[in-house]
Length: 167
Image 1 (cartoon, one colour):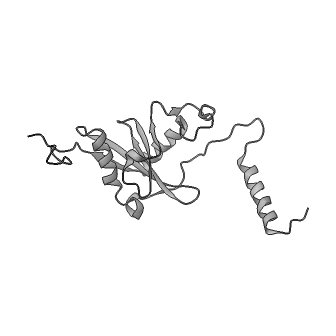
Image 2 (cartoon, one colour):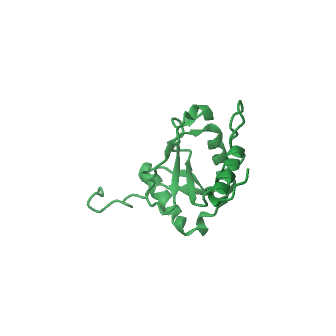
Image 3 (cartoon, helix red, strand yellow):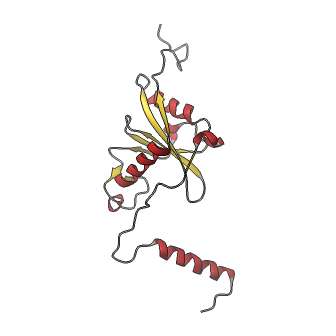
């Protein structure tokens, strides 16, 4: 078989790539061995204010508690950048996308008790849920490569308008 046009060659190349990704019949799909390529949040313009974005979210959720958070910058297959905010004490894994200023508006705020399933088969087609293995990969990468933040309690009166402040 001779393929001469560009569309045919692209289709054939794509077919070979897809065949390499798909499991053989009777085999389970393998999960990626690593989390992927990480990047420094401090050195990336779209995430340069990550500390204040994360602090604002955590202090809004728990204004009177000290919290520890890990933020892991990752590069997706399409070369776009995103980060996971792992907040163990709050029981959340939050998707932080470039330019985002309010994590409460994130399109993925996973509850570590409700949104984590045991295996790939338990996902049942969901693109929202996450497996325990994937969460563990994120945890490990976060501890190795992520930015560790300690969020202090909000000081009295800070962030409260004068009209609402109690005297």
